[in-house]
Structure formats: structure tokens, C-alpha cells
Amino acid sequence: MRHLISCATVIEELAPFLEPDIECHVLEFGLHADPTRLRTTLQKEIDAVCDGETGDAIDPPTILLGYGLCGRGLAGLSGGRCRLVIPRVDDCIGICLGSRDTHRRMSEEHPGTYWMTKGWTEASADEYDKVVAKYGNERADALYRVMFAAYKRLGVVDTGSYALDEVRDYARQRAGQLGLEVEEFPGSTNLLHKLIHGPWSSDEFVICEPGQTTEFSDFLE
Image (cartoon, rainbow, N blue to C red):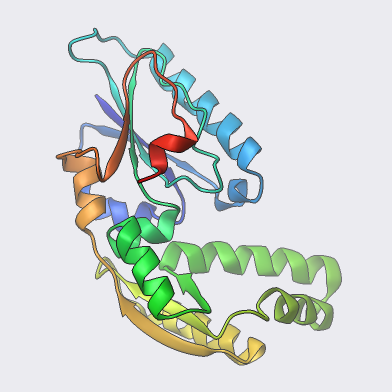
């Protein structure tokens, strides 16, 4: 059986490509705030999967990871007896734009863009609600204006995986509070489809064979 361990921010984009033989584990977005915690949590999930799997060197169990490098949180993972397959991108936005090169090109062409998908929007809303609960609306909005001072727009990524109505509404509301523009950009399901179905080419994926450990350099060009 194949296993998928995914960040909550991309699971809806991955959902259309999942098959019955894939066991799915979804982890909270908040782990990104601490790459060390993200790495530790992922390693525990990977170890738990491997402990329950059988396989051999010829056909090892495969764990697909719905993540990018994510602040180096995916560097230093060991698959044990399992093979790990990870998109060779900087973060989840790169996955939804189709490649790291596309992500970097679009960021260069549209500087000051804070990228958003449905999962990213839902996670951001949860984080905002926590800040409001702690500091109140007025102070929370002031903190967010400082956090987004370097941004010009909220970029909504459309992968075609779901209706964008809720994402648009949230982006417009948040943009109004922060004094930003909202712009939509075409996404891609190319990397999402390949993660689940292959092929896993070395230029698009980090493939960590049994007994190996992922390195930061694996994610570089």
C-alpha cells in the first residue's frame, strides 16, 4: 500500500487524484511555524507507517509527502525501510503552481505577492482567529498590517480543483483590512498528479530510498 502524508493546505488539491489503495494522513498547517517541530512530527508519522508495513529492497513501501522543503522542515527525514517521495519545491505554493521554477518566475514577475489557495486561506483564517482571541480585533489588525507591510497583493491560485468563491471572499475581506489588491493566477495540477501517479523524475521530486536521509542539498537545483 502507498501512503500519503500531507499538509492540510494541499489536501483538497490532492483529493481528486487519490485512489483507494492510498492511506492518507493529514497534518495541521500550524506545524510550519516551527520547522524543527514539523520535521519531528513528520518523522514520527513516517516511523509509524514503516512499523506497520512489510516490503523488500526490490519493492519497498512508498510514502508520498504533500510538502515542499518548507523552511528546511523536510531536510533530515529518514524513511527507514520505506521510500520517500517529495516534490522538489520550496513550499506548498510551488506544488499548486506546478513547479519550483514556475513559482520563482511568477514571484519575480509579480513581486510583493502573498500567495493563497483554499487550504492556505483556511489555515490563515484559523491563525487570524487565534490572534484576535488573544489580542482583540483592533490590535490583531494592526499586527497583520505590520506583517503584510511588504506585500502589494494577495494572489489567489486557481488549480481548478474546487470553486474559488470562498477563497475570493476571504481574500477580498483580508485585502480590504490590509490595503492590498487581490489578483487571480492560474495554477497547475501537474505536480499533484505526478506525486500520486508518477512518474517521479529526479528534476521534479526528491526520492529518498530506504536507509537514506533527505538533505537540504537534495532540494537545490
